[in-house]
Image 1 (cartoon, rainbow, N blue to C red):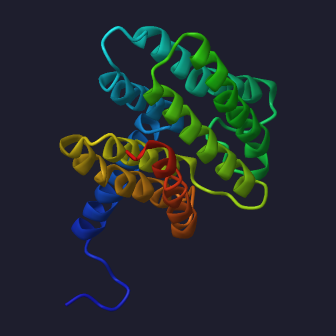
Image 2: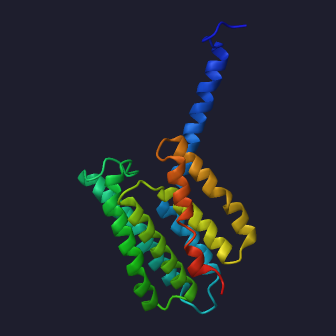
Image 3: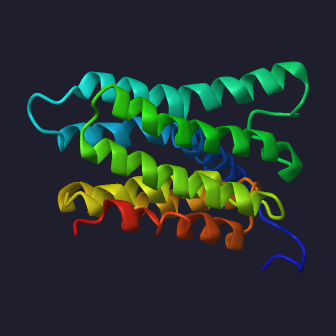
Length: 210
């Protein structure tokens, strides 16, 4: 038996390897499930439920450009200019302007989608996203809520609302995995992750079948 405070070298090595693997996994999950990335599968789900003859391609391009590409470019430009320390925006104060810009993009997407004749599912989706972004932006003014958790939960709720159980059920595990990654990396506390998950609930108002 080893004296108190001692650790077997093999145990220490195994622990380091385990932590290293968990770190890499958490970073990979955070990158793959970054909020802008969630717009792609969400748009795919909406296009799947569009009717024949609807301008699906124009709707997808409009939705992705306004809700994902433009906010991403805004964050990258802010990083290059030194306005934020990292694209991950570790400090709450750095998130205020990107949060406002993302909300405005989601709001502006609605008339643009109507202009291209987007089907109703895209209009409902954008209204839901704009509501969620406004909620997240308001909270960001005084608290650092998890946008990663919000995006992952939003994807799962959209799939569930569109009546895709085979897709929604596996996706329900995604918010948990993303939440773990953000907590493991020290980017958020459990309460910040839970609040991000809860921000997806208003999506049901817009997306759930009446």
